[in-house]
Length: 209
Length: 170
Ligand SMILES: [Cu+2]
Image (cartoon, rainbow over all chains, first blue to last red; front, top):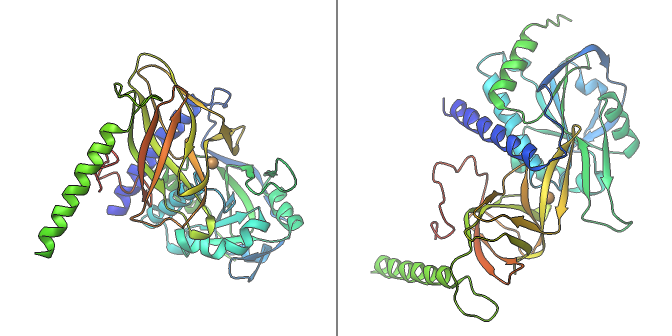
């Protein structure tokens, strides 16, 4: 019960923040629909990365589970901790609605391997040890990013810039147990609304194999 | 006996911090002037030690009849502090650095997750729960404001005990 209340209040908090942010950034585009079904789900192409423990993580690792892939980087103190917290609240609330094996795993795709790989295990352990963090070779990251129809860029101002920002697609990709991307979840990842949307979508899908 | 001494010391510290707060806004000549800026709900987000950076938040109110401009933020606890804004443009998340921030007369600006934040890099020592970062806000008119920012795991989780000013938890 307390989890529910927390999920609600945090969702309201984050929605209010987004409204403020949109007003502040005059050039910001008005928010689109929060959730988009991918009309013709596309299979994720093979890729080869590693999780935060160094174990291989590839296309096969996506099979037989629902997953939410969040693109981010470990030197992100403002938005990433809030997003990871919201996704965890989504999982907690889904626990009341669908069976545990249908609750999507949270997969943090760290796109800045030079800075991310050395600290990924500690970073994720700090927020929630259940999160899966994946990273690796730039071309392999690029392959998965392409499958997700996403984008990222290391915004280095000069060659030895160490304080650079990382621009990245903000949506979370929902992957089904066949390894296909079936939906995009857009910010602010309101925990209650997102849990309702995902529970409905996932309950309506059968995978009997 | 030990407990009484502790209470006495806490009271003493509290009195000192109130005095500090009353004296904190001085003009370049050092003479007192009416309070121009009010800082409330200041906090710093807890991050893993390896991250070597924190995001800082507060609300800034301009109590005066003129616009004020925040030109820099310094702290003995950090190598560098910038004013940042997280933004979402065409579905792409990024942060941008603001060289300065103007607050119009009698307006309040909110620093909060997903929007304005202090980007606090290279902490001299890793900040943990229970620590506070002491920062100075420097304004173009010469005013500078001393702010204590406690480290919290996240503001939404701590919103039950609202902080109305930065001295309440000390
Ligand atoms: Cu920033």
